Image 1 (cartoon, one colour):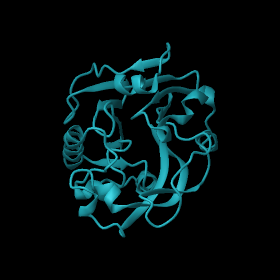
Image 2 (cartoon, rainbow, N blue to C red):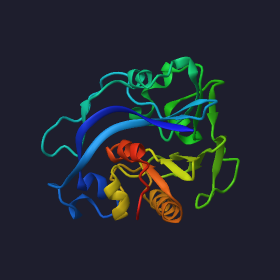
Image 3 (cartoon, rainbow, N blue to C red):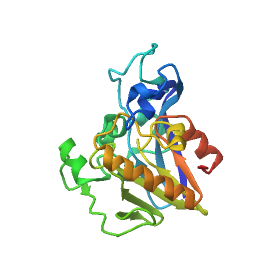
Image 4 (cartoon, rainbow, N blue to C red):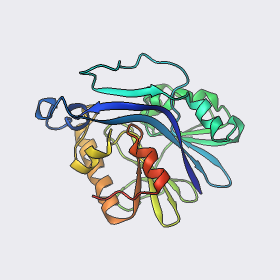
Length: 249
């Protein structure tokens, strides 16, 4: 199994109140303290299948500008998602499955570029996106508990999705097992690795109570086994992947 990052933006920043202020409120944190930000999604190549863990932007969106006070500036554009996937050597027709952590466009905009793939997504987020069709698989988490997570579904050998609600009402996390490591593609459970280490939730959360349960489970999972934490919105996501760097809490 090989996991690769599709990089779309880099060189950005995220404010501490945005990344940390979900439970305590923005005013509890320093609005002049920023962390590095980027945007990347991931590809799981099992050798038999090419599986996308989220699909990012196709074109330009009205993204927050680069200026003081911006809570999340993703950075300078590197490439679109389809161009990034092609640069890794993959053709659209090779993609067999797309695993959607949640409904937001920086994770789903390029879904339409891979019409031959099955889309795995929670019922809640499928409804929110009005996704339908024979290629849409609404997760039932039919494979029972997976370590700290009570609900999971096996997607391919060594690849699971687990229910991880909070950021959205149907949020999921993708976990791949390879060579003794667990690769956690978590979407936006946290917006930066510093928030994971500080045990803080972002203000960008639909259900704060569910998000707290999810973050507690994520942290317990990481503490118990060697996990590479593959973040979407900070460069530690692709750096940790390149280095096979295990998260320490």
